[in-house]
Image (cartoon, rainbow, N blue to C red; front, side):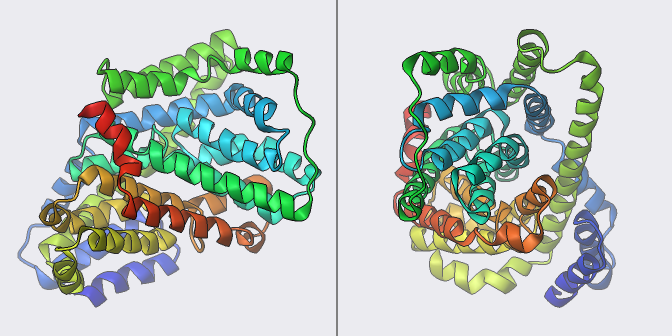
Length: 427
């Protein structure tokens, strides 16, 4: 069964079919060969059920808000704010890059939108300051992946739907790991700048800093609305997504006037296309996950390992981290979350591990996978934006992947990194 399942997937992937086709075809092949008397309509029911949860409504709204802000002035104002305050320190420009990507991730929730919004203005500045192009590109695409950890996070929404975990708690739990990754990247940026003797930028005066604060005050309202609204119980994550769209429209249409009404249909179309891809992947992944569970394939592949690890929560978390890390290197993180989360759910429950901690760890692996060769989605986004070949894009990524793996180890060893703020907010 395992050979048939993954054989069909691999063949179709090498033939160039999009990911949803191998998922559905492999599930159908398994049903027809090994369970011929099972009604195939069950797969359709699973696909419909996979996209039925109301919380998924937040996904297109967060994507739409990100598209509006990418088109407008939000990214520029956040970048200017960070540059004014930390641009003058050693490694200030790459630290500005990491922090700007984190802030934009906190208002967009999209890694690819962050690569587009921050990569354009920051890469030329990094090159002009004397940094290598491989370092600049790797920093941008890996720092952009912090958007998967800092709320709002589409990856956490998908995990919450699949596992039945509170999306609001997941959002708060992602802040600690996101800030940890930011600190690690900033330390690395400082060391690189010191080793290569990159000159520092001139210090901005307090008048310029205050001006940047005033310009960025309204964009910084996005994380306040999302985190503060959920934390205070004013609205749910789905309602927070709707408010973020309204807020983005007000800012970019009426206050900044960077987006015209005539541009909204094209932005909505872009959002619709991305949302369609995400929802089709969710539907196909749900059907595939149900099929392998029905065929008891997880027990065949991982039964002994999971049984042995069940008595040791840290061992369970380590196995989960390795499985998701390897999976996200080759397959879209959304698909990996959809397939592997149900497999590990029973052993997580038996081991008594907080599913919110697992969600933070899983999302961190998805962040790593988004910029990890061979198929990280941000790698191909960077190829399109920077117009550089694949090997040049990935050349500088190993140190960042190593730092992300360190963050994973620290999260497993010290769960309070993710759970402290969650416990403070919800317990």
